[in-house]
Amino acid sequence: TVVVTKARLDDGSTRWAQGGIAAALGDGDTPEQHLEDTLVAGAGLCDETAVRALVTEGPDAVRRLIATGAHFDTDPASGEIELTREGGHHRRRIAHAGGDATGAEISRALVDAVRDQGLRTIENALVLDLLTDADGRTAGITLHVMGEGQHDGVGAVHAPTVVLATGGMGQVFSATTNPAVSTGDGVALALRAGAEVSDIEFVQFHPTVLFLGRDSEGQQPLVSEAVRGEGAHLVDADGVRFMVGQHELAELAPRDIVAKGIMRRMQEQGADHMLLDARHFGAEMWEQRFPTILAACRSHGFDPVTEPIPVAPAAHYASGGVRTDLQGRTTVPGLYACGEVACTGVHGANRLASNSLLEGLVFAERIAADIAARRPWPAVPPAAPREPSLLPLIAPEERAEIQRIMSHGAGVLRSAASLAAAAAALESVHVTAVQEREGSGKTAEPGVESWETSNLLCVARVLTAAALEREETRGCHWREDRPERDDAEWRRHLVVRLAPDRRLVVRHTDGTAFPSTDTLSVPDAPREP
Image (cartoon, rainbow, N blue to C red; front, side, top):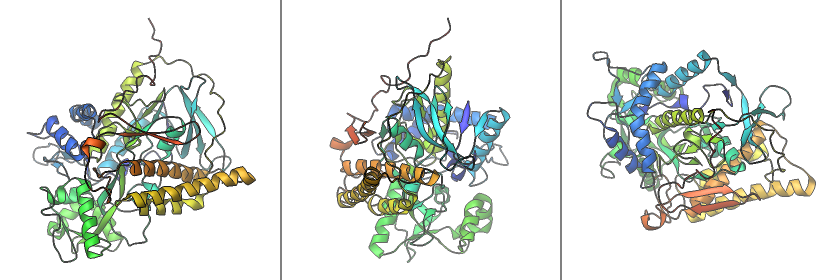
């Protein structure tokens, strides 16, 4: 096994996860109750079979994680894991570590395990494309190791199976909670390799992100849902709790409902942010339960102990991604996907809070088991010669423009007009690059910045096309021109792929369950007698 990572081993979204990991670990809680909350949050689009696998296997997966070395906060008296509550959950089932540093602790434990086992790792390496053999099976990846050799130097890792765990694509928007590495590289690679992606229009905007001003860009500090879970209130400038009456759970409604509530209040009042009031926590609770958030707020000039925190929604999580089956297999033989880059069907139209770490945990185990069961793998044949790519490299200077287009046209508030305008603007960026290459042979210089920008444009075009196709409001996809949910027409998935000529092909499934990938997934490898 070789682990290739874009930056350092812990430089992904995992270590930024504040709230925790959801599992039915508490007295009186059951996987069935966890399943029900997940299905409600997913707004009718969850694949129930996938959700059932998540919630039933989740508790033991968390216990195995603890056995691996992860330390969760426990009650001093009983020694039991402390559980808190977040939006959309009807029970306290969120395990946390370091107060609000759960992801950092999980990342630490897993990185330590990788190093203890002596697994080979390649850090600071940007994955570029999938290698395939003459039969279209996975044969490895191409990659660029940053800081070594030529600026545009490309190497390869040969392997009969590849597991994509590249995280999200939040950097396609101007403001996001995602780290700088989240540029949609895995989804773009999969699309270029011929894999299908699904539900990519469902981008979750976290409702409470620290508001740093209208012109703030890049990664923004997250104010965890766990703060509301412990009793913080959303208020407007007049101190009115505007979520009361909008949902039975008020501030603890599913994220799409809270984000919409904030946006509506902002529109009504002509404001650019709302306020999260947790002054009643007191200094001791802030310091012990939410030390990371407290430090982040204070570093930006806000003190939540004495004043409400300015918040606004920002791009947070991609509920869709590379379509997989229950073993993590994609529609490309030998290619698996796990975590935020994947679309297992668990999240539907809107991820339930703290199900993301659990999904990564449960489906990673399923992928590992599937790969182990198919051993021994045949020797990797030489990669087939590849046709020249029909997708041009995009200049790094276009990155900010792509983000502006997406934030304005495909953000929290969407409409046919805004999405059409975004699609046209993105197409213009693409066509200009094609014309320059075909007319004068001019193209962007190969390198990390242009490769990332090209990936961002790829996922932006696919996301916008899917959002324009889905003519309804569902989960975190909010169409102002189609404000109602339409189960008769749209309780189905959109599946997108790139045709050989690089045109986008969009199709609809017949219902909420994903079509099988069996006909295209990896066949059983020869086994020893």
